Length: 199
Image (tube, rainbow, N blue to C red; front, side, top):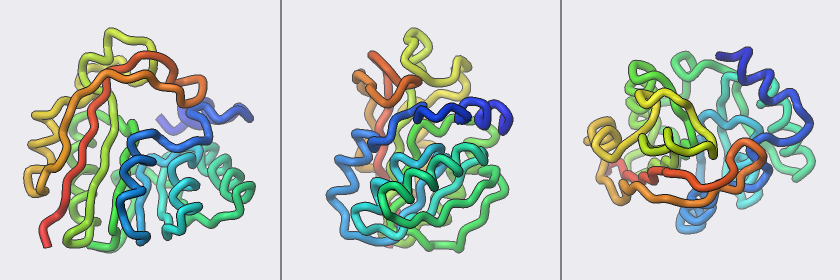
């Protein structure tokens, strides 16, 4: 998996663009600045955006190439990132250390997903928020991006189960047009999620 992502990110072009995910940009504007974690941060578009807003940004991704491009983007935009290259099942952060966690199109096999999602809950401070945007199961009919294995895709019941300990504010499937670099283009079926950890 690491080799696949390193190869994907070798191009000078940013495969998912340099602008933030729309849902993320809309949501982060509603929060006071704090400490944020960007999971599967890739080439850094969301991490750099948060840093430009004044957030203390932590990020992780499996790909060294992704990290390299993210750090270049951060230098170009004159911001700092705490970016770790690590597998999602091995990366470590302190318990209850983030005010906000964003997961954008981070799809894994089910056994990995449940462990990663449990970690998200652990890493949230009491009262902190988790945001997710990913492809829902209907995305298989579209060519705008995402894995081709339905088991890796989301639906509201799945996310409600994974995050049953959170106060769920948003858990919706929508159809929208992606314009996020060459690999996320066109009509897509996505799910958007927002949950708050109890204080």
